[in-house]
Image (cartoon, rainbow, N blue to C red; front, side, top):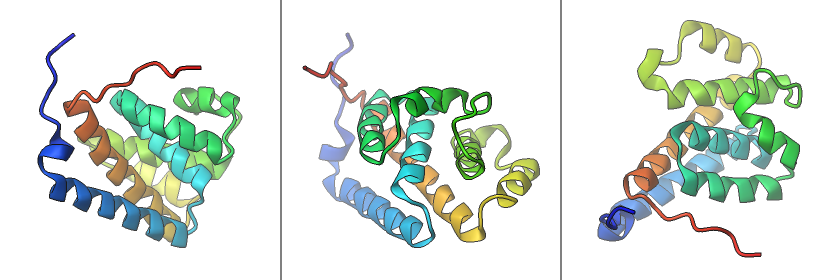
Length: 154
C-alpha cells in the first residue's frame, strides 16, 4: 500500500468548508427545483461509480438506501441503459450525470441535451446538473487523497 497522502480537506479547511457550503446550497436549490432525495442519490452514486471513487460510493450507497433505493436498483445503476428498473426521469438524470462526469469527451452533446430536456423540466435539468458538478468535485478530492474505505464491520 502506498504512503498516506496530504489530506487536502484538513490541510485547507476553509476551502473544504466552502466546498461543503457549496454542496449544501446545491442540495437546497436542487430540492427547490424538484429533485428529491432518491434522484439526488442516484445521480451522486452514478457519478461516483464512473469516477471510481470508493469513498463516495460508500457514502452514497448508505444515503441511497435511506432514500428508499432498493438493493436491486443499486445493482442496476451501472447498467441503467439495459435495465428496466428506472423510470424516464431517472434515466434522463443518469444520462445527464454521465455527460457531466465525462465532460472531457464531448461536453453535454446536443443529442444528450435534447433527449434529457424532453424529459426533465429546465429547473430539474439545472438541479441535476449542479448535483453532478458538486459530487464530481468531491470525487476528485477523495480520489486524489486516497481516502480509506475499510470493510464495514458486522
